[in-house]
Image 1: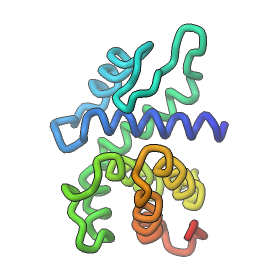
Image 2 (image 1 turned 135 degrees about the horizontal axis):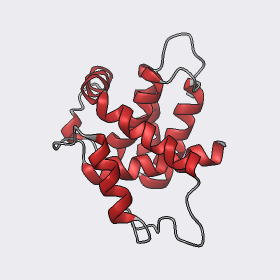
Image 3 (image 1 turned 180 degrees about the vertical axis):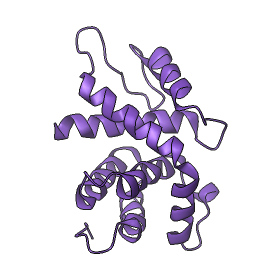
Image 4 (image 1 turned 135 degrees about the vertical axis):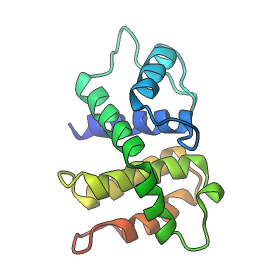
Length: 157
């Protein structure tokens, strides 16, 4: 299940990165339909092959990715406000698009998914940042997410 969730987070990242939530993406269903319709069985926007007929994406992974995307789209204004509050001297526009997408996903989990422990969310975000971000991304993301995480929870530092 954990591996499916990591893959689901990576797909959600790819969807959010592809649409760059700054544009009019207030309809998550249209975003999901567009992503699955355009990018399946081909290379995605980050250059990796998606699921194929021989190796389909598990439904639980797809559903988890979709739930994350829906949540980020629905609460994007609140999530972005929270990110700006903790990101001293960083505007959203200055952040690398991949880092911002990872932050939005993880912030959504931290703020709206109490079923997922904060330390798991932060660790997953750091690991995904290592894979898709720059060499500075993991520390940047960790620092901001530690400030967003609910108080009293043990987090990764």
